[in-house]
Length: 436
Image (cartoon, rainbow, N blue to C red):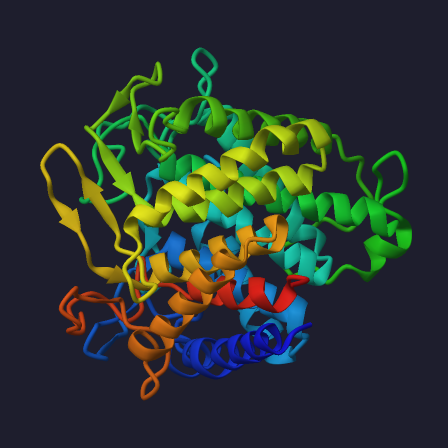
């Protein structure tokens, strides 16, 4: 390992543990009502009675599960278990299945719609908790949520996944993730965050088979069943036959094809953002550079985890093309702007925290697998920008963004519904874990 990579890994671990995770452990745990608080404003005010979002909660679960799996510190396991138990007790809909969009600060259902983007993140968190602990209950709930998405979101006529349903899985008029999104039934963003958890769930189950925790037929061994750390709300104490792995593999293959054949714009190599049910491209010529670079490595990860040589041969040229297209959003200092509407001419050139984190991972991925030294320099330049401009060294965590003129954005949350320890902590963990 050369000195540059060695120093990069050390810096990433320091920021992960002492800046990001420490902030969430010390300042965001709700010790009165359990779980984690729902918001800290951009000027540092903790809002103890803020609603608790499903996305925030699932991302906290993923973050501390992954941190424990990699670093083995008990305090990370405690935080992950705290969040896992809270999600199963307060977000999981025992009557209709799936998980709520939000609960109030007391843990009571608030917005009960079923947004498949959020359910995907629940799978992501629960499958990572299973990878970290072997907890069978987490895996069972992840599989339940996978079945919910396959039953209620998968479009049997045109393929792909719709955005949302009512609590009872009925049609819903407003499918948007947020007020910033266009209201169409299918989006790149939701598909991106369905392929992401499906990849992790598939990896978790493959690891279980390869470790011998399941027999060749897919049944848990008695030793594994007895050693699993189950919580009081679980009754999963016996070995079970698993039939989900082949189905999950088929879903993952299908999602890869959706990205390469439907979402990818063959003319620009950007990933288009919104679609009608029949995959007609909608909402104009939009380019989201952060999603492009994020998708480049997540699509590659899905193909790598699947392990099919033919799929990799199809995907890897596209991975490089999408990363190349995202360069349009790069600035000379290594940072990346958010997005642009080519029809209106509007450019969102704020420098968002999540875009910078994905920018680092995306170029590190290109460097690692394709030997592109220039990609490494892009990653290092963006990391330098992050260190100089986005890390809050005084209070912990990262600022939401810097404006193009360099001024700090203190209007958007420091922690909240969308400001979660996920993009930045995942960036750190990716660099720590990768064989660079």
